[in-house]
Amino acid sequence: MASCQRSDDFAEKHTACLRTESVASAHELNSLPPMQRLPSPSAHWHTCLPEVARGHRTAECLVVLIVGAGFVGEHLIDCFSQAFLTFALDHNPHRCSHLRARYARNANVHIISHVDEEQRSKEFDLCLISVPTLLLADQVSVDTQDIVRAVRDVGIHARRGSAVVIESSVKVGTSRQLLEPLRKRGVYVGYSPERVDPGRTYPIFRDIPKLVAGIDQESLDQINKFYQRVFTTTVPVRSLETAEMTKLFENCQRLLLISYVNEIADTCAELDIDIHDVCEAARTKPFGYVPFFPSLGAGGHCIPVNPWYLLADGHNLPTLRQAALSNQERPLQKAREIFQLATEATDEHQPCIEPKLPRILVYGIGFKKGSSSLAYSSAALLADELTSMGACVKYFDEAVNTGRWPSLRRADLHAQVTRPDGSSCQLLDAEYDIVVVTQSPDARDRGPLRGLERCRVIYFAPR
Image 1: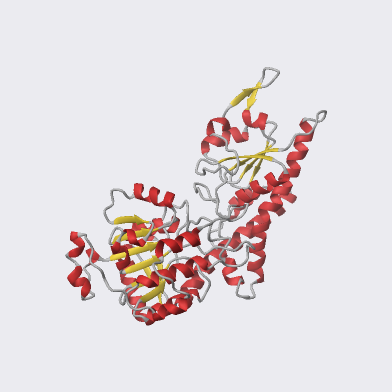
Image 2: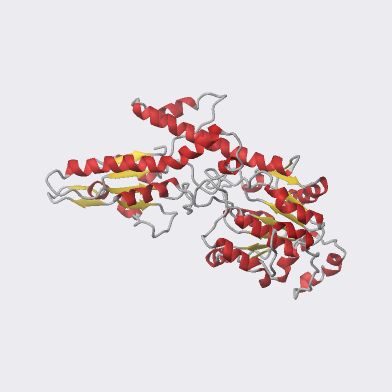
């Protein structure tokens, strides 16, 4: 999942955006009366009202509401706005401004921060919920407050014959628990896990086979009709729980392989073997091998988080548990090793003067190359740990704009400086003890990184 964007105050603001009356729990959704449709000032919409009143809307008048317009939500906007009038709700004003600018020329898209901005958004035929489902501060307990609130608040406006689908990654059984009260009111409900891979351009989003599940056959049939309008291939599955487990199985498999290749990388380092040579040789096998390369660890809203959706319920999954814990610990462990190396390098080059703090540049700080998000970013965890240990840390990543650490410009990455003796050297050699490469370097940056004389370069990504 690869996943949804969130700020720390999401829960409070999201509730204020969508809720128009208080509902104590998801269980109480069953007691809510069906919503009555209200007239809209839109002339085009008014022509559809007679059919709407009979419950038969033409395709041009069907309304899709997307709750949570983060990374996944934006992909859903792209797809569903091709066939339906689409409203996307997000509490973040900066996010809303960005999306309004992006979709300014798409008459089918309306970005809102509150349902009261557009009466039609309350009259949805299909609602897709793509809010975050992350971890609590202990990094092992699942935080479900956002999705519980989202389903509860959407239920206020859901009418008989409309459909509500969860797209967020969830624990097995969550969809049935939250959506069953809506089904009893005549709302079609289902689960369709997102399959977005940040940075991947092929296959395009609508060509990725889309899993679709309903709480019953009638819900599945109705929901599948919506998805068939915008996705090349839909894959109906037997139950909500099957779809939920499939999503977790896919992502947990990736985490297991990532953790395994990182263990092998550390072993290769002890044996003085280049792990990248091993990976390249292994991938020539045409069967039985899945190519993975070593890294600092998996980041993002999905891969490092999803294992805990299974582990939180006490299932006996020791291999998965160890992989999840290893992934959490790896950036901290590597930070300690790098700090020690940087300290030794500082002492070696300045033996006769008071030691200076290690100077470290992190090349690539987002959770994935090309991503602006720091969500569970292993590079960000490494930078934070190095900073807490006393290192002077800067980062280079043109996709990320944050004041968490000082940043380096690309021009400085390639710059030359003059030494006191009049000779020249790269700025990186003069100002840093270690460069930590967490993302595969752009072609234009490989030369400067390979040409360093004094500064050590440590790779956690293909060169």
